[in-house]
Amino acid sequence: MGKKSSSSSVNGWRYRHPRNYLKNTKLLVLTIVSLVAITCLVLDRYTLTREHQVEVSRLNQELTNLLNQLDNVKNRLKGSGVDIQIRAKTREVTEKEVVKDDPLDIERREKVKDAMLHAWTCYEKYAWGQDELQPETKNGVNSFGGLGATLIDSLDTLFIMDLHEQFQRAREWVANSLDFNQDYEASVFETTIRVLGGLLSAYDLSGDKIFLEKARDIADRLLPAWNTPSGIPYNRINLVHGNAHNPRWTRGSSILADSGTEQLEFIALSQRTGDPKYQQKAENVIKELHKTFPVDGLLPIYINPHTGVTSHSTITFGAMGDREMWEASMRGLQSLVRRTTPSSFAYLCEKTGNSHTDKMDELACFVPGMLVLGSSGYGPVEAAKYLSLAEELAWTCYNFYLSTPTKLAGENYFFRAGQDMSLGTSWNILRPETVESLFYLWRFTGNKTYQEWGWNIFQAFERNSRLETGYVGLKDVTTGVRDNMMQSFFLAETLKYLYLLFSPPSLISLDEWVFNTEAHPLRIVTRNLHEKKSLGRLI
Image (cartoon, rainbow, N blue to C red; front, side, top):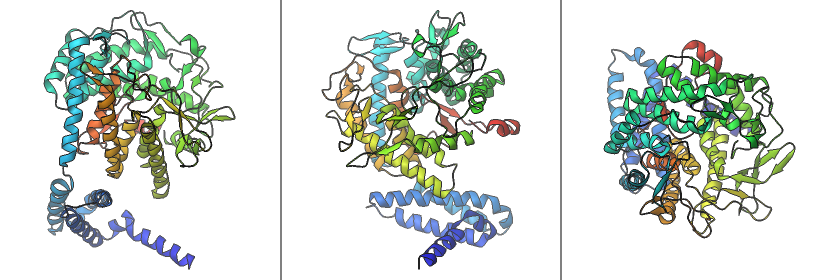
């Protein structure tokens, strides 16, 4: 009886496999018509439950996949009239009926836009041109050397939210006042993801070449950091003199999360300028890491820039923390998954040598989104496994928020037998990682639960962090005592992901754009054949 069930399942999958639709054009067309009819029937019901809404999203995705299959066989149907008839009907359904802008989504999106406008207006009023705003004291502070970090970080968010007057004023500041000739030791990582990434994104969205010119200027000032024996970059560099080094507290080592995260921006710059030097420097890091890549895919957080050898240090997906390397790392990640008692919250522990610490940073809450993105490269069984893990981890991250009196998450959590989770470091600095993952989960599954979670987090920010003079973090999520800093990533990431969470998927489509570490969307450019063979399509 068990064998019979297994056989039925296999045969069922055989008839659902896209390859078989291609072999039978009539079956493909009939299937599309059936899916259209089912979709229309479901959409005509106005009292959809959450389960029905998820089903509509699934049917719509399957319909889109079949339309892509239809494109491959349309030449067989040329002259028959069938292709034209079906295409017209399916376009009508997918564009006019399935992709609807929910009134509740519109309302929530406008609330997030209002939050962005409030944050930006306060920045303009009290800290214009400086790196970050201190709302409590109504002044700016140059925490990144006076590079206008909040302004550059906000460019693409302003553009995406149609705040064009504000965008234009920011553009004029970039053109006339932004000066990278600062005798300042910049973080290569922070400057890359915030400034270089922000400028490239503004260029891709607007087409304004001033942003590309400025992006090239700052990249040229950062590039000497890669001039090490191994090609692993130093983490700090003087923007005037080009002197690069690592901070003392790393004891000469480079930080893996810095060195292994800067490829996207430098590859994008080479693609847009035609100058290969940026891409070559950045990709060499991946090649160097590949030489000593461990079987479990888990590299510690420190690496020697002279030898390219990793040091004995913590393995973590939290702070400081090609396909073959990806798959190895994902197998290693699974070895770090633990579950609490009594509630069975999934979490990622930290590893140092052979010992493990039952601790997880809120910073590691980007992992669910990463897993969702990565799952698309696997077959159905493996993809479902990684999606399930992503959903479990996202539930844990959401409970980081639910577990505090302010409903805002602390910086990290510890897990002890019988206690589920307990708060570690108690501050909240407006971080985006959880809402980032909720955005990806919603985009891939269509499950509105993730929108509800995101809305609850947004409301908690509004209750606890909004002042007349901007937004601030909390020194303690248990008491609600505030700090005095509006982090630039609140405008660049947190509010942008929340806005997109309530926007149609066509706005910054994941088929056309890829987000960098600071949530700056870069347009995907297909790489040439030689590059694909060497390292695959990174962007």
